[in-house]
Length: 327
Image 1: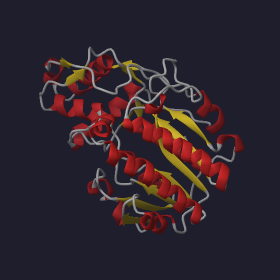
Image 2: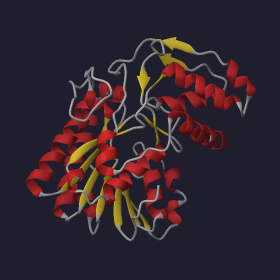
Image 3: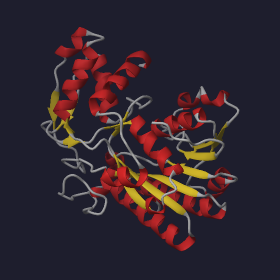
């Protein structure tokens, strides 16, 4: 999809992370100046290695919990893509205070800095966890339930703050509720690794992956290029109706964890036949997990012209290839 966006200065917070670094690359390729703000709590320096050689790329090592860092990073910036956050439901259950400090106080700092420095538009990473215990399927933006984790609360509070800043201060905001994003550069290591890179790494090493529950929980797995498209479209839209609201960013389909495991084994077996024989272990369900997740992307299609190109299968083929070459 060809999206015209060039000669702008764009701040990507959390730009050393999985999603953030992919956004930085896409923006630079289109001829923009990119500022990255990251404290490397979860971001990785290797994600920025190639970018640091680009004269249009600026790295600011700083923390969104410090207003001065946020003010420095937003100076002379046209747009903000706010990706910085402490992700992971289990992490937030273990340490709710730090998750709140980063995801709520840090978010507010970024809004204040963007307002004070005259940023034109603030696009932020929201989350499908906001749907909480809502039973409605597919998920539509206007119908949410009660949050099931501290992380989900923080991401909902972000949406409320963004709404107030658009109404009170005139800051243009767009929230993108990401659904289970995966793809190149996603870290397979660490206690809070996302499920796809973790499974890939285990299968490649001949280790038995552990599926939480019976494998029938389902997710709307979303490939990184769909997410990049949604962010770029949010920056360029001139549709007044598209502003100061939130959108689901997903493919608009759902697959069970058992489906996912079957695809991973199939695609990885093309590189190593033995992977098809690796046994899978089933463990207990994880606290705070939503049983099923399936997004309606009609609102994003209508207002942003969002048109996701990568299904789970198509995205997995790309991701598996990347992991095989880079792990």
